[in-house]
Length: 251
Ligand SMILES: Nc1ncnc2c1ncn2[C@@H]1O[C@H](COP(=O)(O)OP(=O)(O)OP(=O)(O)O)[C@@H](O)[C@H]1O
Image (cartoon, rainbow, N blue to C red; front, side, top):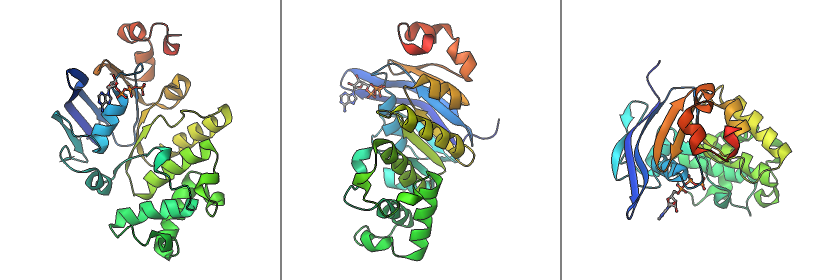
């Protein structure tokens, strides 16, 4: 196997007495789509926060592209190419879809946020922002107000914003949450296309999507990874089936 792009080793985070991530170790190879699944409250979102840098880890190490990034800020991790797809709440609804993507391009170049309304009018920024929108099939919505997008389109825009930062590895936290069947199909096919060019870490409750897309799956239960492997092995893993008893994946 090639050198991992992301390497997580013995990562921990507690809130008070609650160990929310507890000695978590796994690797993600370049080009891999690695899904992290687990029952509600298992610690998946906390783990993504630790990987993105929005939450400091108590102990353990995170390496990205061969460099340790454990103590780096979120902005520094984004500049190195490790970006989280931010939640809808971070979309600026009053601005156009293009302006939202342009802001992310501008953040990558390190220039000030203050003039971002005009950023979309600067050719290099505009071109990069339009390219990110085209990747998520939102280029025809570029000049619409972001607030006017459907729920599924907003999730596409979140991914475009992460792409526009120049990310090599995208951390996607439940991109299908709250989407309808058609929206979800659009996002699944989008992720399949993104796999061609990007490394993805995907947290998702939709097991059909996970097992259709993932190269490998890790299972988090009460903060601990109980299994990592290719989908078929994980699906049939005894501990995984036990952890999910009564939940959809064991079906
Ligand atoms: N800031 C915090 N302070 C205290 N407890 C927290 C905090 N953030 C998360 N927790 C607790 O940590 C546990 C794991 O939460 P987390 O959101 O990471 O789980 P999850 O696997 O993403 O859950 P879900 O699938 O429901 O989104 C939960 O018990 C939660 O209440």
